[in-house]
Image (cartoon, helix red, strand yellow):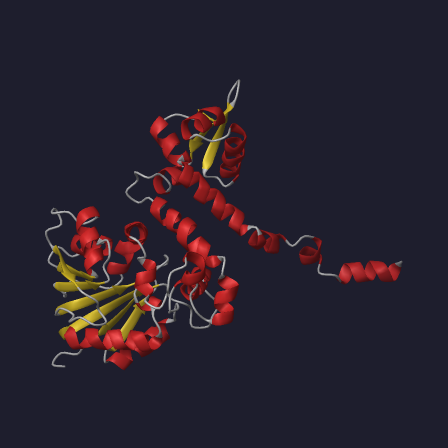
Length: 359
């Protein structure tokens, strides 16, 4: 009896008694799909437009769902602190939390709605094949969507609808993180900026806002440029222009500063050096390149978001997330010097490499 009590006292009580962290990790996808579904059904938008709390019956009628299903979804969103529950005399009614109003409603200028939709309908499907990606060491577009992934952006932009979704994803990310990365360093000396793979133009808008003397040229594939002109960059953005092309094969326009935001993480080291070398040749003497990526810590301890993103790069692309030292090595191999990096304390960080005057 005494021996049993001693063994129990010596046992790691917390982890064996209840593996809270493991259970949270195991069931994490339930949270993601709850948020995805509430956004897709329009729960947060309906509550925002009503400007008053609504009951499960009112929301299910407005959104065309079953009452039982809506009650459960609203309960879960309340538990996630995305909704507030109001106990009435006859029924519980619901309203958006402050955070949901800002980030989960379609009409908000910093909405993550499109990012959530892309995560739900594209990334989530790829992650079904994460085990295969790790075994094979390559992306899983072919299994997830039945499209050949040899040309990465042919797979990413496999339809006009998918291309717009991806551009909306990028737009929502830079609406939240963009100003931090373009102001991580003082970029005011660079008047002529080229945003390679500038996509929706959200980062270009942050540049022209933060640095009123600069002009920005978005360099991207012809169909991306057409879509950006149509949906994202209006005539009001007079200091933003476009240049159509493929940055691996077409001439890169001359500029003082090149921005590569979420570009290098798509590609292998060899492809990165090839692209950066082309940028170096095009860059004006005394110019620079700003690399915007989620930086891993040098000791491998995190950040967790960047570590998970690196898995996502395996599932979706040919690349990976990297440390500042690894980006420094890539930039140095292409000829850039005086490489510095800054952590923004948000998702994306900044690395700046310079081309010496007279080179």
